[in-house]
Length: 56
View 1 (cartoon, rainbow, N blue to C red):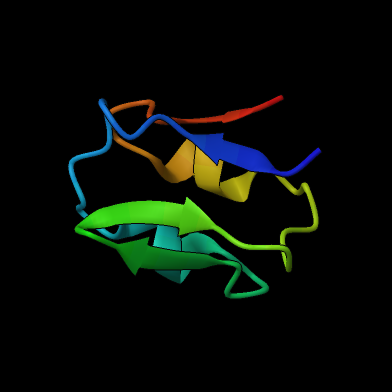
View 2: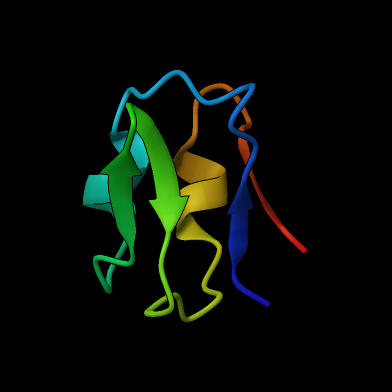
């Protein structure tokens, strides 16, 4: 399953964007959004400083 972003917790810091090897994260309304290109690697989960991203 692709990573999921908790919009209430996401601060929009963009740390996950540069961490994603497939560029599967985009910013939407100032928050991170995971796209269909996600390969479930979990790198973004480890990179998020506020733990707003999780694997379902």
